[in-house]
Image 1 (cartoon, rainbow, N blue to C red):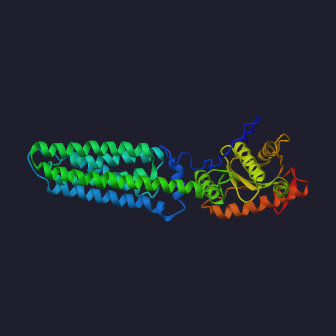
Image 2 (cartoon, helix red, strand yellow):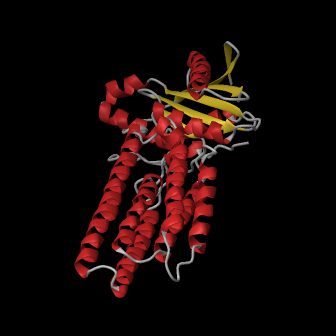
Image 3 (cartoon, helix red, strand yellow):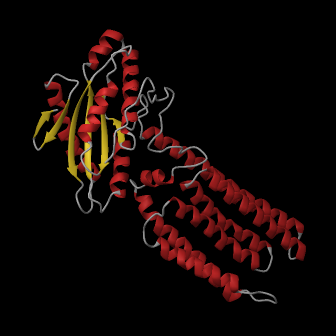
Length: 384
């Protein structure tokens, strides 16, 4: 069972005032991107569901190109073994993607490496010419995949590999005299412009897209998730828990008498209270999903075994209220728990239903005097 974390002393988890504290998409604009979170983010659109089939189709096109090379290339010293192996691996990749599922992070990085090899290996063994050098533009597709789903490090490794092999292809063609220096130089410039210019532009675009996703999925004042971010992360947890007997617990948290804080101390003090409460909620939540769902309302969602809601609520009450704070505040918490249904789950409907029960329980906690927790039982609720 998920145990709540109790923050100690004054060590609040404080969001940065100039930007959100990223938890759902950690490090998404850094060198290492949280691949699973990127996939979870894209899963809400049709693009990510179609992506495996589009990649499989690209593998089929590469397979056709390799088959054409096998059928047309002749010459002394030409050995088709590398092309045959490349074709077999490409066919296996196509079948792998036809499963219709995105791989895990390490599987995705492995795909980038294997895709680079199956594109580059035939170019190395085919007779040198400017046409072969031009075919290295196929690596643009691999670079775009690396940019979309991985960070700067994977993209740089891919780019260095492309640069090395493309340079080797140009030097090899120059050494055997198959093309003039002017033709090869012009070809190399075009390849550099297309492969590096296109992939770099896409990398900048995807990085900005991920940064925008962070802002779109997080509350700018507190750094916690907003309602959309809550939906995305809970959907990912439900997806990961599919087929296992788990429960979904939602804690609806409302700060008591918050309007009076704004009236007496001003909105700046009220904002500070919200940031402080959000940091403490995030600290107690641990791996659970925490979000700001309204003005002074927060939610915490736990997908796991057992019924951790009451214990989590107790920890939250202790964490949020500290008498020595400049502006002390208490909270009322409603708890609702349901078993995760079998089969396909509409996460939005599930969240709406359980959150409504937790919200009713929260109002029961307020009727009990506030600074209390209440648990929903069917259509009723009782204070703890």
